[in-house]
Image (cartoon, rainbow, N blue to C red; front, side, top):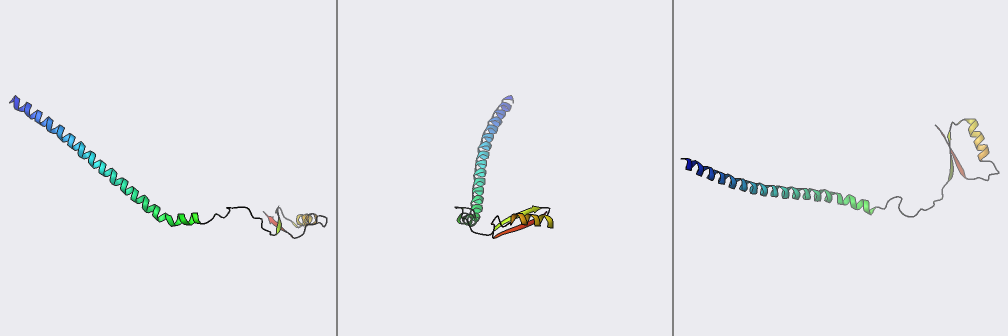
Amino acid sequence: MNQEIIVNKIILKKYCNIMQQSITVLGRLFMLFFIIGGLVSLLSLLIAVFASAIPELAQIIGNRPKYAGAYKVEKGKRHVFVCGHITYLTVSNFLKEFLHKDREIFDIEVVFMNK
């Protein structure tokens, strides 16, 4: 009877070792397929997102930026901004001094900004 128990224990131990190894191999195969499937799904998602962004990227690359290139001087009106506490007295004093005939300033706009 003791021999049967010993034999059963040996058989059970061998069976468990074989099952553990097979489960480990099956588990590793399952994880391998799971990881590969996840990577394929992620790659297809990235391709789909990139494919939908291609027209917008082409438009951004195709359009020349507003401030790219050499600076071109454009002729326009000359102007002066006057800011601060604006009253009749300050405006009249400023205009008398700024537009005095000795300065020879012509064709200029004065813009007053109060506050």
